Image 1 (cartoon, one colour):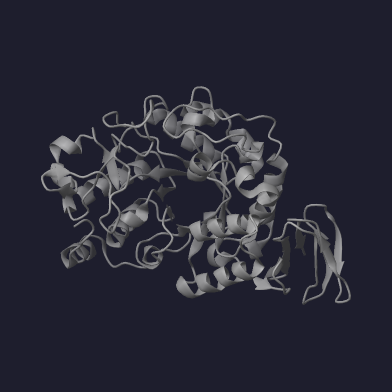
Image 2: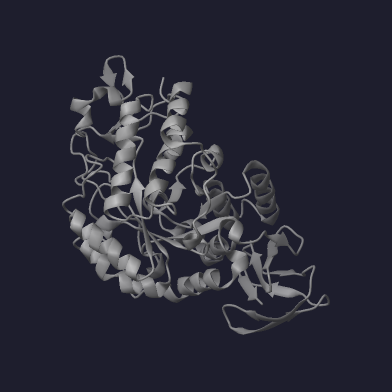
Length: 448
């Protein structure tokens, strides 16, 4: 059965690597925003060099971490679509020839580093393409059903519809070693700063602990993001810094559609605080490659609440915000997943909005990531409006959100003096005898 692991693995890991410990959050990521790059769709050529030409614009936008979707050669056998899924990896040590070369990637990373940005790779470790060399050279590296290599399955043994990929067997220690060697290659040779680990929760926690310790020997400040939310052991035992905020994303869509309200949001916060270690950080987003392709663009999913929810992703406690490429241009359309489908960039009409949010994140320590930031404290009551403050040192940030599609009024439980409205740059003061009026899905960010 997939993902049944032996104590022997853990003992051998300790002998090889040393004791496990919770991974400190890298200081370079304390106020960071992640920007996801779909190389295939980013430009007409769909290559690394084209993205590199756009780095000055991204630097001006203010993003800190560039997440490159999988860069590797894509399998052709059993592939989906003309181009295939970027998550069907044929060679863990290669760069897709349509994207460029290893030299191109090194130049990209070096240029980004000179501009003060970091680069993380999307890592697909749970499965490979069917024409990956291991299929023939090392069939024992894969999960088998009877005598046949299985396509990707879930942790409970049920089958996915990912028939284009073969399921790796993490009971095989040799395969684990090869996987860690491949991860290490990119950190050592291309100076990659971290990884976004695709469906990382389908892989064992003790494997990730192995990988973390090996990678930290090359770069002690490596950053690790995992596409998983439910397993908190990935944080306190697996070496990850950030989990996916899928539950919050689902809740935000329900709020936008009138199905949930401020009380439900408060319940989510309270439950999350009880469930996860204090240092746990979540990736918060209004779009990404999955949402864009399978569930449409953010404006269709959120309607008039889109900007309000973007503000929330940047101001939530224990959160690191994500921007998916083209959101700063209004995310014109859903992009194909298995074929070429170039982004329509337009005139970057939302660039100033996101730039302002990134600047807010950078300048106000209460909003910083992980334990660098501070807790959200609610400062109002009611089901329709949620207002909170985050304070650290001599800085305070108040966020007031109308979760309703109707005008609302609210009052705050504390006075505010000598502050300013972040977006209008106008003075803001509040006393207990005042009411704050809000239009449908209006937001206010007040700073001091």
